[in-house]
Amino acid sequence: MKLDLIQTVAFAGVVLFLGYGIRRLVPPLARYNIPAPVIGGLIVAGILTWARSADVTLIEFDTTLQSPMMVAFFTSIGFAASLRLLKVGGPQVLIFLAAASLFAVAQNVLGAGLAMAMGLHPLFGVLTGSVTLTGGPATGLAFAPLFEANGVPGAATVAVASAMVGIVMGGVIGAPIATRLIERHKLATKHAPQPVDTPVAAMLVEDLLADERLKAPPGEDDESFSLLQSVVLILVAMWLGSFVSGWFAAVNVTLPAYIGAMLVAAVIRNVDDFTGVFRIQQRVIDDVGNVALALFIVMALMSLKLWEIANLAGPMLVILVAQVALIAVICVWPIFPLMGRDYDSAVMSGGFCGFMLGTTANAMANMRSLVERYGPAPRAFLVVPMVGAFFIDVVNAMMITAIVNFLK
Image (cartoon, rainbow, N blue to C red; front, side, top):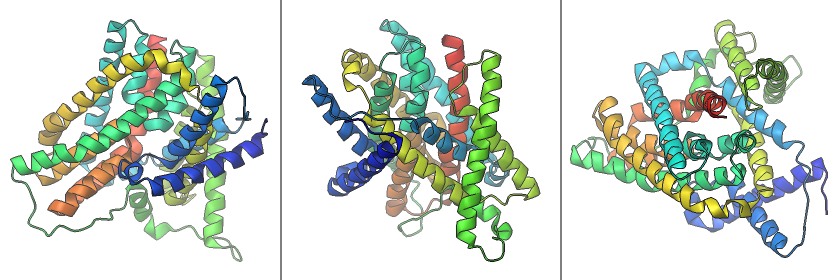
């Protein structure tokens, strides 16, 4: 059975909600922040792989909309790259971002070096470095075609496997490392432990513009108009970004499809910060981007060729063990002393481990478990989401692009 592009998206939506249902029924999946799109998509990929082993093709997909969904998500990330937000975060955000960027480079150097030592293409090590660990499954899947074209077979499957290991390990070791720092240095706060529901950086952006709320024209609903404006802005950034990407291609610079749109979105964001001409609603932009991300991941995973990485499992495991050890050491030193050697710094170390191995959701879960036991850490909850949710993604994308162009 072959599905057309609308049927494929509809099927992906059903699979997405299957993933949410399974995550509810299997608590460890939620505890380790395994994304619902990944759960549903991998189940379908597993079923189709099993059918293929019996020479049966159950279903074929039209993935025409997969790439636009991916570009739309990363465009929403570009809209969050606000210099004004960096300024509000202060020097600690810049320091934390610089550290994350430096150690993302270290992940790639370590991965490429181990890959070459095992006789593999160095880009295999980069794919199991910052691409999938700092970047997560979305970045891994977005860059997979570029890596496959430059000598990494089964890049999409490798990316998902690496990202899943990172997500699990980021959730497993982050809080214990921070706990050890807190107890060893006697850093527990005097505040009563309490549940924390701290807004992420998207809310901080919105708070910056609290006096500049978008007002719909007379007779229009504010929320509907804001959603319409956000969708149009994303589409315009994607449109203009295609010209930017085309220019890079013309000068022989290899880029993933979304870089041009991300750059245009960042320009629009910062122009709007200073002029207020659009009054961009970042939370709405993020909502649109998250919808696109969920559908993109499901569509990408449904067509994975899981059998392609059977011979790469051993080398991948070696590299990932080394990557986990690297981040564990870095969290203790130099991240903890660099951020101030205090309680907030210890909590930040747990968050750093979460997003440098997995996702920002891992970082937030690690930090929440700490503050529920030891007390609030407001500085950590300001700095970590701003860097982990937005700024490191932008830096990581640029860095990966430069590495691919250097090693191809």
